[in-house]
Length: 329
Image (cartoon, rainbow, N blue to C red; front, top):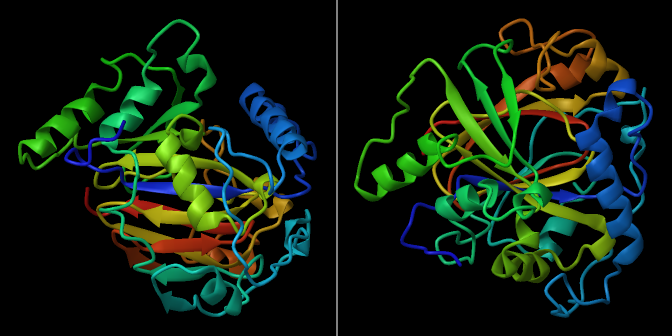
């Protein structure tokens, strides 16, 4: 399906499920989109195990690997938190043994430089992702969760959210962008005051080569512990704002460069909701003090910044504040 002569995707999230998710502890998490994903995760958790074929009928081999603790870290609770003073970094290529030896799993962030050769990996390209987000046949795209997030760079109260499926005209900026890049265009947005980010979930469920690649690279994680591959496409300045996730996350930069601000601690559920931007369509944290501290979050509101390039991978345990902004296409 992929045409590797076309522009590659920006970066992808690999989400790892928790055994327990506090999705019902806050009223706003009763959102229909969240309920749909929660139901999907429960179905996957009960149906999947590490020894069954993947969603395309292929049975991955299970490597001999160091044991990782699959229990839910205590930092996922509504009130507890932990902190660290620096983000460790190791050189690639990615290997589960070197990853396990860092003892970062579930404990603190880790930067893995040059972990993957994204040029030769079977990753989907920009056009593949756009096509997934565009309604093809009746009922087909409704099962694909896609979002278009627009904001004015440098502000936190301008985020706007639209849910897919989208028409080609609604994604014309991304489709035209891919064509322009193939022609050597500089790829600037027509409206320089706002930038859009396209986010598509469950990409591995629609692209077999990506699903197989995930089994090969992340087969050390039990199947029920893996959620999905989420792909984000963004131009310079694009991003979805400062936020936290309830998952372990592997953020793989597939092309271009991106700056990440990473919190030096975990953020409790209470502190998250005490520090959200009011009346925002996107769950964005309200940062103060030039992005160095916010609210009562303590260490979680203090950041270190790092820039990642193609092949770099950033691992984040749950509840770590992170904020990515594209610095090149």
